[in-house]
Amino acid sequence: MTSPQSAPGDELVFLPLGGSNEIGMNFNLYGYGPAHSRKWIVVDLGVTFGDQTTPGVEIILPDPEFIADYAKDILGIVLTHAHEDHIGAVAWLWPQLRAPLYATPFTAFLLREKLREADLLDEAPITEIPLSGSFRLGPFELNLLTLTHSIPEPNGVAIRTPLGTVLHTGDWKIDPDPLTGPVTDVDAIRRLGDEGVLAMVCDSTNVFVDGEAGSEAHVRETLTPLIAGLQGGVAAACFASNVARMDTIIRAAEAAGRRVCLVGRSMIRMSQAARSVGLLEGVGPFLDDVRAKDVPKERLLYLCTGSQGEPRAALARIADGSHPHVKLGKGDAAIFSSRVIPGNEIPIRNLQNKLADLGVRLYTERDHPGIHVSGHPCRDELKRMYQWARPEIAVPTHGERRHLLEHVALARDLQVSQAIAPRNGDMVRLAPGQAEIIDEVPAGRLFVDAGFVTPEHGEALRERRHAAFNGMLAVSLALDGRNRLASGPQVRAIGLPADEDYTLEEATDDLAEAAKDAVLKLSGDDRDDDAAVEAAISRALKKAAFRIWKRRPVVEATVLRV
Ligand SMILES: [Zn+2]
Ligand SMILES: [Zn+2]
Image (cartoon, rainbow, N blue to C red; front, side):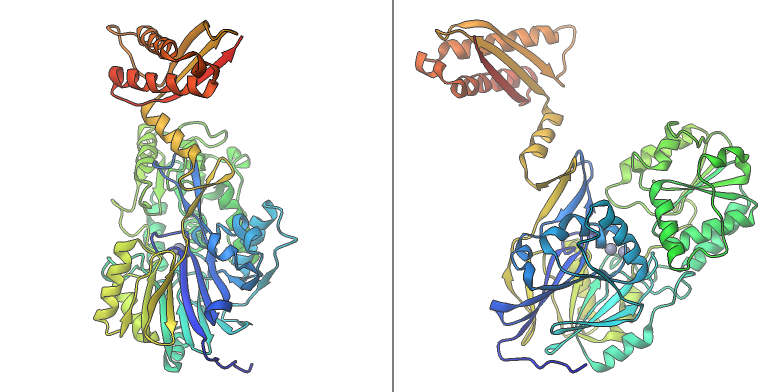
C-alpha cells in the first residue's frame, strides 16, 4: 500500500458524538482533509440504557444529526467489539449513515443478527476483518490490534493518516489469561509506539481504581470450588457477552456433575455467536428450560440473563415466580458473577431481596470477592499502555466528566506532553499543530420510547414524568349553541390522593366548581373559542389543585359542543 501524502490545509480531527460524557453510547468520528471537505470514519456506534429518570425509555441513542448531513463522506463504520455500548445503535442509526460496516467475525455475527431483525441485512454491507487485520478507507489506513476485555474479539484500532497515527483503544484491560481468545498483542502496540503514536484515544472507565482489573483465570479459580460445594438448585447470572465467564461457569457446573440450562434469549444468542467462532468448545450440549424440567435441579445449573435486575430477564422472572419452567426456593443458590452497573442499584437490590425471600442463598461480588472481575483497565494497566504506545496526545474517552479529567491528570503524571478531554460534540484538531478544540457541533441523545425514536427533551416523556410525579386531572364539559353550560364540568383525578376528611369526591366537586367559575367568567366571544375555554379551565384547575395538593397535575380539558 502506498501511503497518501498530506496536502496543505489538511487536518486530522477527532470528534466524539457519544461516550465522552458517559460510560456507554460510544460514537467516535475521525475526520481527515481540509475543513470544507473532510472524509470521515466512525469508530463504534453504541447505545446506553435508560434508568428511573427516563421511565419507559430503555434504549438511548447518540444523536447523529451532525454527521448525517455528511453521510456521503463517511468512508466506513468500524466496530471494535460487540458490546451494546459499541454496536447497539447500528441498526437504529445506519439508515441515516449508510456507510459500510467493518468488524471481526464474532462482532459481525451479532451485528448481522441485529441488522436482520431491523430488516437491514440486505442493505448494510458488512466486511469481516480477521483479528490483527488491516484495511484502507481513503486517507485512513486501519490496523486492528488484539486486546483483552470481557467479550470475545476486543480490538484496538491503529489509524494511520498522512498527519500521524491514532491509537483508538476501544475497551480493554490487560488479562494475562483471558481463557478465550489470545492475550493482548503487546508487541504490536510497542511497534506502533516505536513508529510514533500521535494520539491515543483511551478507555477511562476504571481510572479511579488502583492496581489491575484481574484475570478471568482468577474468576475460574474462585467459581469452580464455589459451584462444586453447592447443594440444591443453582442459578448463575453473568453478562451473556462474557463468553469466558460463561465458559467458566459451564465447566464448573459440568465438573460438579450438573447439566447447564441456558435461560434467557441473549444467553442463547451469545452461545451461538461464540460457537460460530470456535468458542465454548468441548462443553454442553446445553438444555433448554423446557427439557431441563426432566432433570432434578440438584443436577442442574441455570445460566441466566438478568444480572442487572432487568425486569423481563430470566432471573427477574424466576425471582417473582413468573418463569414458566424454572423455579427456585429454599436451599437453592443464586450467583451474581457480575458487577452492579451504576444506575441499576435499585432493581438489583429488589431482585436480590425477592430471591432471598424465596430462601435462595445469594453469592455476589461484594461478599464473595473474586467471582467477578472488571473488563476495563485500572491505573496500573493504563500506565503500562501509555508506556507501550507513548502517545504525544492523550484523549480520554469512555467516561463521565470526572473520569475523563482524572485520566487527563494521570496522563500528565505519565509525562504525556498533551492531554485533552473533549465533551461530546467537541471537535479536536489532533494535527497539525497543538491539539485543540476547534469547533463544537450538535451532539445529544435520542430516546427510544415504545419503539419510537424521540428527542431527549421531547414532549411525551416530559409529560409522562410530570404526570408520574404530580398526577393528572381530566375535565370535560359541554357548551350548547348559545355557549351555555349544557353539562359538566366533570372532573376525574388520576394518581392524586385523598382521605376520609377530604375525599376524592369532594376534591373533584371543588375542582368542577373551579372549572365552572372559569367558564362563567369568560366573555361570550371567548366562549366561542374551544382553545380559550380549555386554557381558562386548565389555569383554574391548576390553581385549585395546588391549593388542595401543593402539586401541579397535568390537566387535560375537553370542550364538547352540543
Ligand atoms: Zn464500552
Ligand atoms: Zn466493552
